[in-house]
Length: 64
Image (cartoon, rainbow, N blue to C red):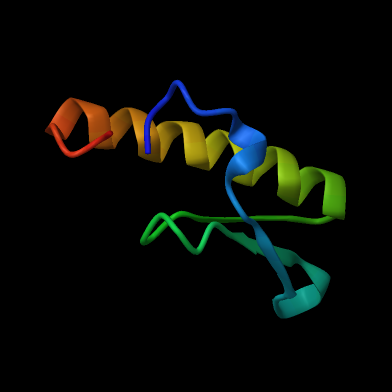
């Protein structure tokens, strides 16, 4: 996985969290989780989280 891959290629799971929030998780990137009050907000937040996780992986030398 790398920053060169289109973000849309990463699967995202949305589940209901506490207090009506939606939890967004990218199951192929361990620990890549975010949330939002709406579906759109949760998806925007997980998109940002995926990019940050990939950037971190590249910096640590274990990106693709």
